[in-house]
Amino acid sequence: MSADMTEEWPEEIYGLLREAGIDQFAFVPDAGHDHLIKRSIADPDVHAIALTTEEEGVGLLAGAHLGGSRGVLLMQSSGVGNCINLLSLIRAGRFPFLTLISMRGDFGEGNPWQMPMGQSTQPVLEACDVMCMRIDEPADVSRTISAAITMAFQSELPIAVLLGQKLLGAKKFS
Image (cartoon, rainbow, N blue to C red; front, side, top):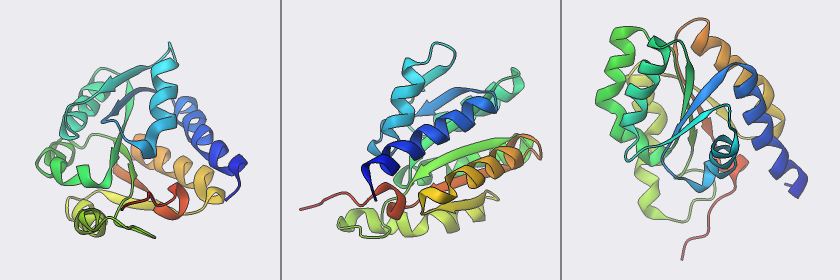
């Protein structure tokens, strides 16, 4: 992947989220979401909310919806397990929910500790009635993020976009 493509697709995601009126970015610090986190912190028109744990973001996004705002939860696949109980809030309340998940335990993973949750992320989310979409190539970013935004906020569905390690690049582990 060229350096240009590495820098372009994260900015494309940020632009699509902002165009859709998303003004709350909830996150646990994560290298896979570094660009989105830094952009949201620097943008005076959004609220960038650092979380102590991923499940706080589920309640935060439900509250954002009730208050007339739109939000997105940025997390790593290892954080999905922390959200299982709170995802019932989204299901019971039929709140729109959008999360972007940087995948680990995926293509080229060298850290054996990331494999179990990385391999369980999509089945766990689907068991909690969260529809999953996956992006592995920069060319798929625009249409997949746009579709996810439409489905989350117009159809009021819980949607997770899985950003695969083919897109993000596998981290080195020794």
